[in-house]
Amino acid sequence: DADVTQTPRNRITKTGKRIMLECSQTKGHDRMYWYRQDPGLGLQLIYYSFDVKDINKGEISDGYSVSRQAQAKFSLSLESAIPNQTALYFCATSDFLGSYTFGSGTRLTVV
Amino acid sequence: AQSVTQPDIHITVSEGASLELRCNYSYGATPYLFWYVQSPGQGLQLLLKYFSGDTLVQGIKGFEAEFKRSQSSFNLRKPSVHWSDAAEYFCAVGASTGTASKLTFGTGTRLQVTL
Image 1 (spheres, rainbow over the protein chains, first blue to last red):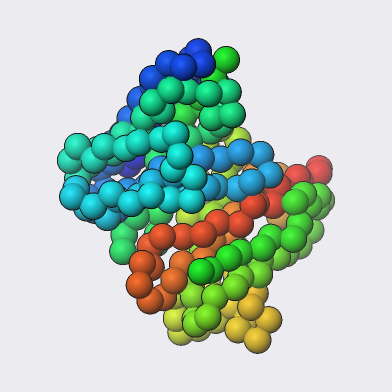
Image 2 (image 1 turned 90 degrees about the vertical axis):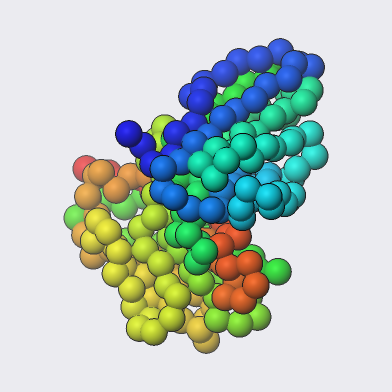
C-alpha cells in the first residue's frame, strides 16, 4: 500500500458543484499538506496542518476548505467548483524538517 | 520569506551525458534545501536534502547536489544520465528557523533525455 493515498485519482465535475478530495497517510507524521500544481507554476500551497487541531491557510486558500479528521486523514473541499480550479492536486505528509512524501495526485477537471 | 528560482524550464541531454540542473534560493539564514523528482502521472519523490554539514550531498539514483552559500545555489548533478531520468525536477527551500517543514517549491525543470 502507498504511504499517501489520494482518492479519487481523476474527477470531472460541473461548475458550482461541491467536491471533496480525500487523503490518508500511513507514515505516522503529524504534518500534512494540500498543494495544487499547474503547468509552469510549480506547486502552490493551499492548506497545511501540523496536527489534528492545527489548520493553516497557504498561498491560495480562497475557494477551498479542509478538514483534518484524524492524524492520518486530511481532506480538501471545493465548496463551489469553478473552471479555473481545474488542476492536479497533491496531498503530502512530512517530518518536522520537511522531508515530504507525496500522494499520486488527483486530476480534477471542472467543466 | 524564502523563494526559489529554477531558471531552466526545459533541458534536453543525450543519454550518457552529464547533467546539471540549476537552483537559486533566497533566504536570510542557512536554509534547508531539497530536490524532488516527478515522473509522469506520479507524485513527487525526494531525491536528496541538505540541512547542514558537508555541502556536497548524495541522493538516490546517482544524483548529487552542492550547496554554495556564496552563490545562493543548490545545483543538482548527475555524471551520466539514463533514459529513465526523464522527468520534472523541483528544487525546494525550507526555513531553518520557525516553520521548517513548510517548503517553497520552484517552478520545475523538465528533463528530456535523447537516445
